[in-house]
Length: 385
Image (cartoon, rainbow, N blue to C red; front, side, top):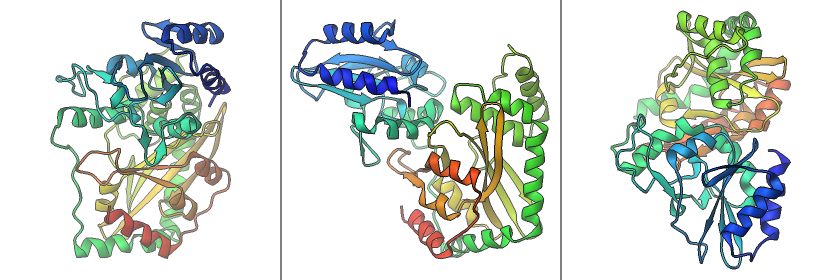
């Protein structure tokens, strides 16, 4: 995270007791040379909205959801000015309970409504929404992004029947899920693993130039979707259009939506059915990429041939770093899994993320070790959520 954001926080703290929203806004804008967009002030590193209340409890309207969408790829801060202290919250879409004002017609294809101060979560996943945690919180948000949050906000705002489906685990399902770590270990010791790894590496080699071009896209969610589709997408026509657009310096990227499936690519062998989720990782950033929907992974692993793998592709400017095929039960990966239960919809066990620093380590120093007992304990924990 850019150091300017911490300088901003320190400056706002140094003005505790100013008690005047307009005066603080003017001082901050001038000191940090921020651009004004109605009530939002922004730079290339962050955006901020100032509000005033007599106390730390405030229900003022902060921003419209459509305007927040423009800044949701940056840390979006809300500074609440009170007579005694200035409070700072991260208010990206991941940290909103719902959308309040004029949101009755909010749908995924009709973004409307406004966010109130009371809609901002003051704690997320047991992490306080306070300045000292902004980097950790934004790393979580960066792996989700606006589109991932939109359907959740629509559901939470309008009390829509949840679109998700909680997977009910039968006794037979439990047995097959419990066997998943053993299947993964056997698969990694097989010739099929080498065959699949070679296939994926060849796919990367064929589009290496386009991957590096796409790696320059600032929006990490768009960048990731494009690269993952270049490697594993099934529509050859669309892949061709993406390659053509990337090769043209000013080519327009065709609009496309990827299905919210568990994996990007499935390879079927006699003994195994292997689902692979392709994940790109900028080696320069610490964002936490989304891993999987818990109900979907449990349902998939309840099949007696199922193996689930991640194919991590490290990206640096002008360089692809050592793509690696890693089982979901890899020891360090398992220990770095973050469960976001309360973020998800009401009819869901939640979703998971990985700590970005662990992915960097695995890409630079591949390790396929799996602890059977810890993996089975982890799966049991997911089932009981």
